Amino acid sequence: MKVLVIGGGGREHAICVTLAKSPKVDKIWCAPGNGGIASVAECVNIKATDIDGVVAFAKEHKPDLVMVAPDDPLALGMVDALEAAGIRAFGPRKNAAVIEGSKSFAKDLMKKYNIPTAQYAVFEDSAAAIDYIRQQGAPIVVKADGLALGKGVTVAMTEDEAIAAVKDAIDGGAFGGAGARVVIEEYLTGPEVSVLAFVDGKHLKTMPSAQDHKRAYNDDKGPNTGGMGAFSPSRFYTDEIAAQCVETIFQPTVDAMAAEGRPFKGVLYFGLMLTPKGPKVIEYNARFGDPETQAVLSRLDTDLLDIFDAVLEERLEQMDIRWKSDAACCVVMASGGYPKAYEKGKVITGLDDVTDSFVFHAGTQKQGDEIVTSGGRVLGVTATAPTLEQAIAKAYADVNKIHFEGAHFRTDIGIKKG
Image 1 (cartoon, helix red, strand yellow):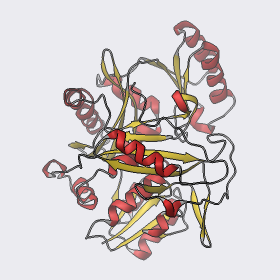
Image 2 (tube, one colour; image 1 turned 90 degrees about the horizontal axis):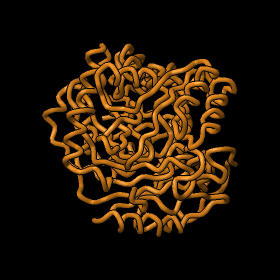
Image 3 (spheres, one colour; image 1 turned 30 degrees about the vertical axis):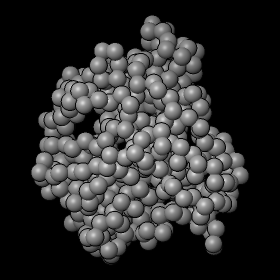
Image 4 (tube, helix red, strand yellow; image 1 turned 60 degrees about the vertical axis):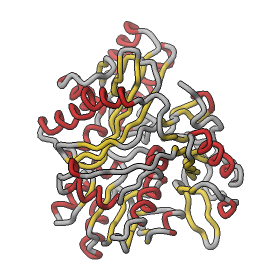
């Protein structure tokens, strides 16, 4: 089979590597791909958001499946356009991808269907939002309503910080149209857990739990990023909590989307907070998370293509999806300055010295015989081992073999206990 994967980051590298293990897959394209993906797939110079370009390529080259991985093309309706052209596509349609594309939609859905989440209010007027912040006090959370590359969330520990976030989003246009509306939420406490699930419109199969590290610096300090690392499984996500989440959050969300006439087919990401009052939803994503995917797919022991087929054919309930017992740790190496301004084109050395990890490429390009940086998050060094502590140690041992000018990474991925 021939597969076209849309996207060019670490998540897409993980998806391509996992698909390449399938004996049924004999050709992979990736649009646009990156310097690492080029080793397992033919990279195609088409932007991930170029719906017309992707459809035209698919019509010409006739892949048996197009896997749309990133949030933007899903929210723009790439799956709808591919299906309209008679092309098999994996991922939610536009009317279902809105569960990530609009935080206010997601919050209203949870409220309507009694899915546990933080209290919230939605604003398009900064003065009204500021009044609300002053009434509620801090800490409080301010979120841009739309897609903002994982950077549209401010966990404000003071009222002044929250007010500044509102002004930046609504008045300053910091996130473009994505920040014209903001969701202001109650501040929740407890361990965070990410749970991804395959969903076929009616049923879901969860993947092993993971934990992301959003802040740029150690001890969860600094600005939010797309994710500086992840590990799997979570130390806190017990079988009892998992059963509770299936009953109160996961299946109710799938059922709610179906009831709204927006059946969700693809990968649904649940960002959870395990609060003293039970698990609550922080956010939904309409696709594989990044960098959780690098950790979680490293543990998959079932043919990923078979799972995609089961989702599309709505027979997921019959699938027996197997996972390795090993733990996994992914450490992101980022460009100096990320998530703010950073330089590109830095030569990466030491990749051939890595022995115990797999290096997923995110922001890289191949220039001649060299791999150079081309994005904020550059590499995801990912190791598996019988215990989480061993996986962490292996990943960091290999991180320290890789070098590029300005390289920045957290040194506490998987270490914090809360």
